[in-house]
Image 1 (spheres, rainbow, N blue to C red):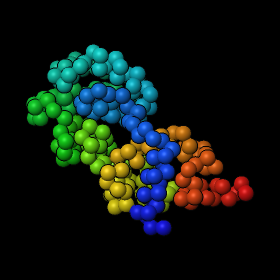
Image 2 (cartoon, helix red, strand yellow; image 1 turned 90 degrees about the vertical axis):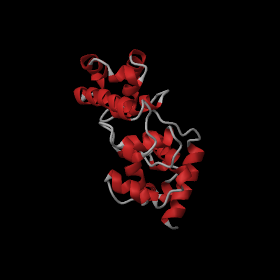
Image 3 (cartoon, rainbow, N blue to C red; image 1 turned 180 degrees about the vertical axis):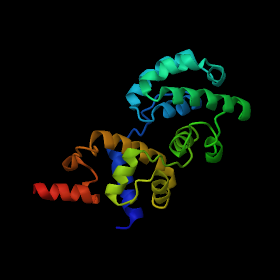
Length: 215
Protein backbone atom coordinates (compact mmCIF):
# COMPACT_ATOMS: atom_id res chain seq x y z
CA UNK A 1 0.00 0.00 0.00
CA UNK A 2 1.43 3.37 -0.98
CA UNK A 3 1.34 6.36 1.36
CA UNK A 4 -1.39 7.96 -0.75
CA UNK A 5 -3.47 4.81 -0.59
CA UNK A 6 -2.94 4.53 3.15
CA UNK A 7 -3.86 8.20 3.61
CA UNK A 8 -7.06 7.73 1.59
CA UNK A 9 -7.96 4.65 3.66
CA UNK A 10 -7.33 6.54 6.90
CA UNK A 11 -9.50 9.41 5.64
CA UNK A 12 -12.39 7.06 4.92
CA UNK A 13 -12.17 5.17 8.21
CA UNK A 14 -11.99 8.31 10.31
CA UNK A 15 -14.89 9.75 8.34
CA UNK A 16 -16.98 6.74 9.37
CA UNK A 17 -15.81 6.88 12.98
CA UNK A 18 -16.24 10.64 13.37
CA UNK A 19 -18.88 11.90 10.89
CA UNK A 20 -18.91 15.38 12.38
CA UNK A 21 -15.50 16.90 11.75
CA UNK A 22 -15.72 20.13 13.70
CA UNK A 23 -13.26 22.36 15.45
CA UNK A 24 -13.49 22.05 19.21
CA UNK A 25 -12.78 25.76 19.68
CA UNK A 26 -16.04 27.71 19.80
CA UNK A 27 -16.40 30.84 17.69
CA UNK A 28 -18.99 32.61 15.56
CA UNK A 29 -16.80 35.10 13.68
CA UNK A 30 -13.45 34.73 11.88
CA UNK A 31 -11.58 36.99 14.29
CA UNK A 32 -12.93 34.96 17.20
CA UNK A 33 -11.38 31.80 15.77
CA UNK A 34 -8.06 33.63 15.44
CA UNK A 35 -8.22 34.73 19.05
CA UNK A 36 -9.38 31.37 20.40
CA UNK A 37 -6.57 29.59 18.60
CA UNK A 38 -4.01 32.02 20.00
CA UNK A 39 -5.35 31.33 23.49
CA UNK A 40 -5.16 27.56 22.93
CA UNK A 41 -1.35 27.51 22.95
CA UNK A 42 -0.34 25.34 25.94
CA UNK A 43 -3.95 25.32 27.10
CA UNK A 44 -6.87 22.94 26.68
CA UNK A 45 -9.65 23.79 24.24
CA UNK A 46 -12.19 23.24 27.03
CA UNK A 47 -10.61 25.95 29.16
CA UNK A 48 -10.29 28.29 26.17
CA UNK A 49 -14.02 27.90 25.47
CA UNK A 50 -14.82 28.89 29.05
CA UNK A 51 -12.63 31.97 28.77
CA UNK A 52 -13.86 33.07 25.36
CA UNK A 53 -17.48 33.00 26.53
CA UNK A 54 -16.57 35.91 28.78
CA UNK A 55 -14.10 37.51 26.38
CA UNK A 56 -16.36 37.51 23.32
CA UNK A 57 -19.29 38.81 25.35
CA UNK A 58 -17.17 41.75 26.51
CA UNK A 59 -15.49 42.45 23.16
CA UNK A 60 -17.68 41.73 20.15
CA UNK A 61 -15.91 43.29 17.17
CA UNK A 62 -12.39 43.69 15.83
CA UNK A 63 -12.57 47.37 16.75
CA UNK A 64 -13.58 46.46 20.31
CA UNK A 65 -10.44 44.35 20.65
CA UNK A 66 -8.24 46.91 18.88
CA UNK A 67 -9.21 49.53 21.44
CA UNK A 68 -9.40 47.20 24.44
CA UNK A 69 -7.73 47.86 27.75
CA UNK A 70 -4.71 45.56 28.00
CA UNK A 71 -5.04 44.89 31.73
CA UNK A 72 -8.71 43.98 31.30
CA UNK A 73 -7.93 41.47 28.54
CA UNK A 74 -5.06 40.08 30.63
CA UNK A 75 -7.41 39.52 33.55
CA UNK A 76 -9.95 37.65 31.41
CA UNK A 77 -7.45 35.41 29.60
CA UNK A 78 -5.34 34.74 32.71
CA UNK A 79 -6.68 31.16 33.12
CA UNK A 80 -5.25 30.24 29.69
CA UNK A 81 -1.66 30.79 30.81
CA UNK A 82 0.95 33.05 29.21
CA UNK A 83 -1.74 35.65 29.61
CA UNK A 84 0.44 38.74 29.20
CA UNK A 85 1.80 37.64 25.83
CA UNK A 86 -1.56 36.35 24.63
CA UNK A 87 -3.44 39.51 25.64
CA UNK A 88 -0.84 41.69 23.93
CA UNK A 89 -1.00 39.61 20.74
CA UNK A 90 -4.80 39.65 20.66
CA UNK A 91 -4.97 43.44 20.81
CA UNK A 92 -2.08 43.88 18.37
CA UNK A 93 -3.53 41.45 15.81
CA UNK A 94 -6.89 43.23 15.91
CA UNK A 95 -5.20 46.59 15.51
CA UNK A 96 -3.44 45.26 12.41
CA UNK A 97 -6.68 43.76 11.09
CA UNK A 98 -8.37 47.13 11.48
CA UNK A 99 -5.55 49.26 10.11
CA UNK A 100 -4.14 47.10 7.32
CA UNK A 101 -6.90 44.66 6.36
CA UNK A 102 -10.04 46.81 6.61
CA UNK A 103 -11.27 44.87 9.65
CA UNK A 104 -11.39 41.63 7.67
CA UNK A 105 -9.51 38.45 8.48
CA UNK A 106 -7.29 37.68 5.43
CA UNK A 107 -7.81 34.55 3.37
CA UNK A 108 -4.17 34.12 2.35
CA UNK A 109 -1.45 32.35 4.34
CA UNK A 110 1.16 35.06 3.81
CA UNK A 111 -1.13 37.78 5.11
CA UNK A 112 -2.31 35.76 8.10
CA UNK A 113 1.28 35.10 9.13
CA UNK A 114 1.87 38.85 9.35
CA UNK A 115 -0.53 39.06 12.30
CA UNK A 116 1.06 39.07 15.78
CA UNK A 117 0.96 35.65 17.42
CA UNK A 118 -0.27 33.85 14.30
CA UNK A 119 1.69 30.85 13.04
CA UNK A 120 0.93 28.25 10.39
CA UNK A 121 -1.29 26.19 12.71
CA UNK A 122 -3.61 29.13 13.34
CA UNK A 123 -3.46 30.31 9.74
CA UNK A 124 -4.33 26.87 8.39
CA UNK A 125 -7.23 26.54 10.80
CA UNK A 126 -8.67 29.85 9.59
CA UNK A 127 -8.10 29.02 5.93
CA UNK A 128 -9.83 25.67 6.30
CA UNK A 129 -12.66 26.45 8.71
CA UNK A 130 -13.49 29.99 7.66
CA UNK A 131 -12.68 30.02 3.96
CA UNK A 132 -13.02 26.35 3.04
CA UNK A 133 -9.56 26.16 1.52
CA UNK A 134 -7.37 23.05 1.63
CA UNK A 135 -5.48 23.27 4.91
CA UNK A 136 -3.47 21.00 7.18
CA UNK A 137 -3.39 21.86 10.88
CA UNK A 138 -0.38 20.07 12.35
CA UNK A 139 -1.05 19.97 16.06
CA UNK A 140 0.28 17.34 18.46
CA UNK A 141 -2.46 14.84 17.60
CA UNK A 142 -1.87 15.17 13.86
CA UNK A 143 1.88 14.78 14.21
CA UNK A 144 1.69 11.83 16.60
CA UNK A 145 -0.92 9.82 14.69
CA UNK A 146 0.45 10.43 11.20
CA UNK A 147 3.87 9.38 12.48
CA UNK A 148 2.32 6.16 13.81
CA UNK A 149 0.68 5.57 10.43
CA UNK A 150 3.93 6.17 8.56
CA UNK A 151 2.43 9.05 6.60
CA UNK A 152 5.01 11.37 8.16
CA UNK A 153 8.37 10.85 9.83
CA UNK A 154 8.99 14.11 11.64
CA UNK A 155 7.85 15.97 14.75
CA UNK A 156 8.45 19.33 13.09
CA UNK A 157 5.02 20.88 12.33
CA UNK A 158 6.08 22.52 9.06
CA UNK A 159 7.79 19.41 7.72
CA UNK A 160 4.80 17.32 8.78
CA UNK A 161 2.47 19.67 6.91
CA UNK A 162 4.58 19.49 3.76
CA UNK A 163 4.70 15.68 3.90
CA UNK A 164 0.94 15.42 4.35
CA UNK A 165 0.32 17.77 1.44
CA UNK A 166 1.88 15.13 -0.81
CA UNK A 167 -0.43 12.29 0.26
CA UNK A 168 -3.76 13.78 1.42
CA UNK A 169 -6.61 14.61 -0.96
CA UNK A 170 -6.73 18.44 -0.69
CA UNK A 171 -10.51 18.53 -0.25
CA UNK A 172 -10.26 16.14 2.72
CA UNK A 173 -7.25 17.59 4.49
CA UNK A 174 -8.95 20.05 6.85
CA UNK A 175 -11.61 17.63 8.09
CA UNK A 176 -9.01 14.87 8.35
CA UNK A 177 -7.04 16.99 10.82
CA UNK A 178 -10.15 17.69 12.91
CA UNK A 179 -10.87 13.97 13.00
CA UNK A 180 -7.31 13.23 14.10
CA UNK A 181 -7.88 15.49 17.11
CA UNK A 182 -11.08 13.63 17.98
CA UNK A 183 -9.36 10.28 17.50
CA UNK A 184 -6.33 11.37 19.50
CA UNK A 185 -8.48 12.36 22.45
CA UNK A 186 -10.79 9.35 22.37
CA UNK A 187 -8.57 6.44 21.26
CA UNK A 188 -4.99 7.19 20.17
CA UNK A 189 -4.02 8.92 23.39
CA UNK A 190 -0.40 9.93 23.80
CA UNK A 191 0.14 8.15 27.13
CA UNK A 192 -2.33 5.28 26.90
CA UNK A 193 -3.32 4.48 23.30
CA UNK A 194 -6.32 2.16 23.04
CA UNK A 195 -4.89 0.21 20.12
CA UNK A 196 -7.34 -2.69 20.34
CA UNK A 197 -10.24 -0.28 19.79
CA UNK A 198 -8.55 1.71 17.02
CA UNK A 199 -10.10 1.74 13.56
CA UNK A 200 -6.62 2.33 12.12
CA UNK A 201 -4.73 -0.38 13.99
CA UNK A 202 -3.97 -2.50 10.92
CA UNK A 203 -2.55 0.56 9.15
CA UNK A 204 -0.37 1.49 12.11
CA UNK A 205 2.90 -0.13 13.19
CA UNK A 206 2.28 0.82 16.82
CA UNK A 207 -1.21 -0.65 16.66
CA UNK A 208 -0.06 -3.87 15.00
CA UNK A 209 2.69 -4.37 17.59
CA UNK A 210 0.35 -3.68 20.50
CA UNK A 211 -2.34 -6.05 19.27
CA UNK A 212 0.15 -8.84 18.43
CA UNK A 213 1.58 -8.73 21.94
CA UNK A 214 -1.87 -9.45 23.37
CA UNK A 215 -2.44 -12.37 21.04
